[in-house]
Image (cartoon, rainbow, N blue to C red; front, side, top):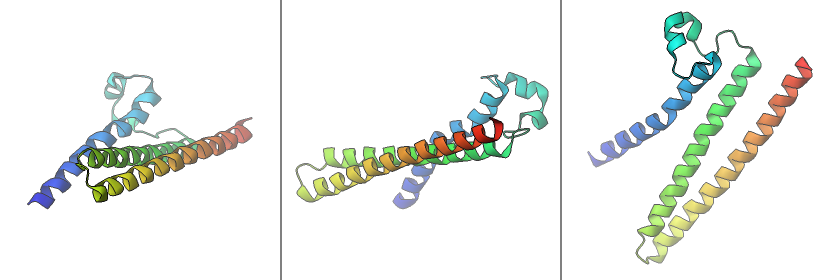
Length: 131
């Protein structure tokens, strides 16, 4: 039962962190931050990605995936910090926490580098076609 409750709590937390990212593209596209125009226009006009080209959709998918991975890296850093604080001087637990912190920071650096490269490449492709 304890394993299920941990899984359920993890699922709820991750769902709450991801949910705003799913709603943001539709609201940003319409220019209506509260979504009132989307409701008035009906579901067909408010679908995310409706009427956009493939490059924009791919850029949104990449940004969403990298944002999600960034959240995971930050959670790993937080878990490492929590383990370090609760280690109570136990060297094995401190070493495990240090490994988590280093892995989380390295992951975050890799994710930020991937975001910079993908933003540059997508911008270059978009400008070469439209420029």
